[in-house]
Image (tube, rainbow, N blue to C red; front, side):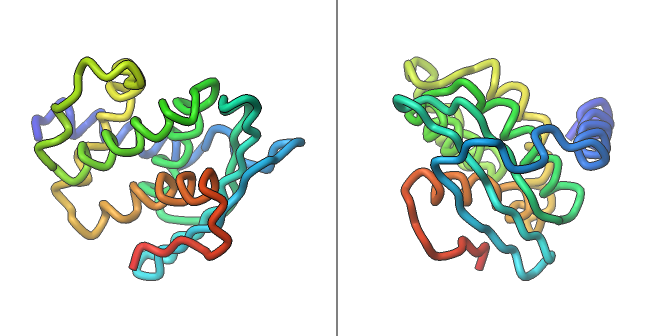
Length: 158
């Protein structure tokens, strides 16, 4: 990771960690799920208001490390207004990005991929240098997927 990227990574983590966006439960909620990362102590509840397959509103509650909070905050920003297909695509691309999987460069022509949103999230790619922190960054995404699928059991990073 270059010095500039590392600096941006730290700046974004601190900004979203100190002042998370979309923190709180929206007035209307159609989907929700709970997530837990026992290794780090992160706990998150993701709330979604989905109308006609579009994320109209999204929020979260919980507590966690700065990476978990920043990732959740950033996720809520990029998913607002997205279709569920677009959200699903971003989830998989983000996961590939932070784990360093080769598939992160596949499917550039995917109509459900918002390249600008993925670029905004790419600052979190630095967590791949710290494998134990990948779970912190991806917990909210797994929880969002569980909320959409209507899974009743809490999501765990274990």
